Image (cartoon, rainbow, N blue to C red; front, top):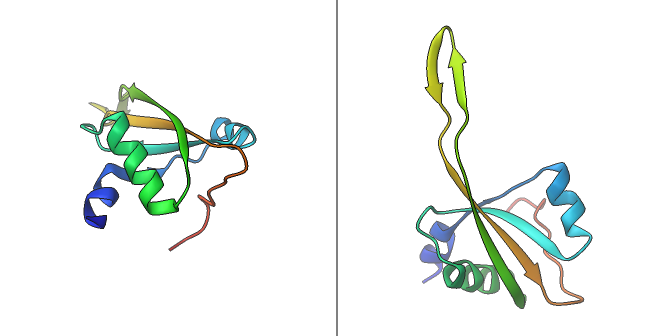
Length: 96
């Protein structure tokens, strides 16, 4: 069962915005493209033993970039904004 949880959550998304959101008990994760809100909620609650209040999902379109005069695009991503119940935290910077 734990293997499925790891396929839903790919990695924590670390940025200035996500660091600011952590002050308000919100965390950002990169998730599988087919993941639903219920999948993300179950994965976060199962892996981190916390209570999730809400989940918002965002599809991020890959940017067009050129590398050595060849046009290409970065891959698309799906991000999940997870709000935890008051008084609960996750240490996303810790390495397992």
